[in-house]
Length: 100
Image 1 (cartoon, one colour):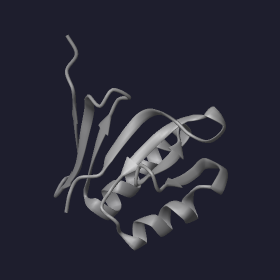
Image 2 (cartoon, rainbow, N blue to C red):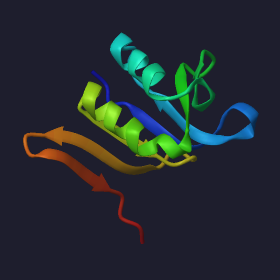
Image 3 (cartoon, one colour):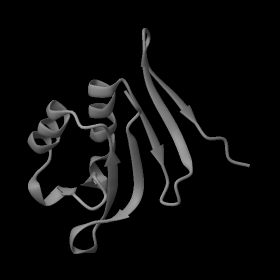
Image 4 (cartoon, helix red, strand yellow):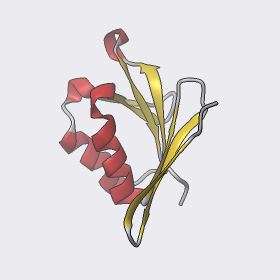
């Protein structure tokens, strides 16, 4: 299974800033997104084959990715990795990119 990618700084409906969430298709994950977030805060993009989710839900999106895929990679608007999250035996391990 590939690691889900959460891309920040993505424009969604009505010009709102949000996240683009790319994962392998998993019915239960898609249903969880639909149940968790109101319709105005989420949208499936057929063109990009990804979910757009309002930025204020970043923490919950990360939690759902960990719950369903055991990992997530967060990237900025330009595609540069900011952090990787992985569920291990001790809980959630977070590895952040070091800035110079």
